[in-house]
Length: 113
Length: 116
Image 1 (cartoon, rainbow over the protein chains, first blue to last red):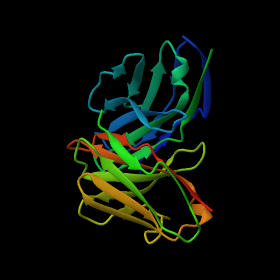
Image 2 (tube, rainbow over the protein chains, first blue to last red):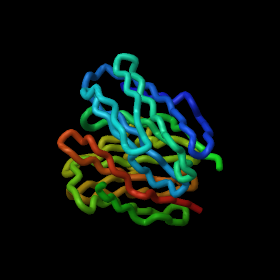
Image 3 (tube, rainbow over the protein chains, first blue to last red):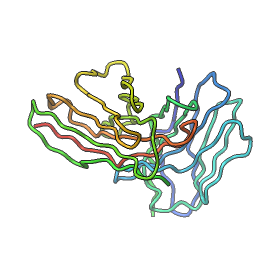
């Protein structure tokens, strides 16, 4: 079974600074998807970024980028120029091309003014 | 991105009653929908996977007779909490998968269930 681990339960960062959230996963699959989802206080889950395992190039979405290390099974999220609106729970997730989406335990990020 | 509508957003009910939660994909067809339960400050716990036209697949420990899931069309899945009890109080979230490999997952806004 696939597992997703986020070793940082809580993190904080000053506004405008950069922060990196860690995620590791375990799978025997060679093709899969990885995601970072954000859950602000409204509790609406919002897709931040998605990475396809067969692509070597790291995904980027504006201020959000990932460092995908397939051999190490690592998928970290970097948030640049942090904004107050980035304060949220961040979940790393894995999908094996179909029926299984597995979420990590989450990292609570606080952006401080 | 695609929109998933979940209703109601909040429901309060008496113990012993049943509550139905709807999850609709508004602008795409979702063969697969997922139902999650989330406790305060915790991650999403998958309850069941629902495929259109077939029986839902429940995760271990989830009572299928307590949490009835119906996925009658490609745009609608429902979760019915039967004979609700206070311990069923929780935040329930649905999601719908899009794409040939279900590579995109979109979430409803969640339902806060409070059983008195």
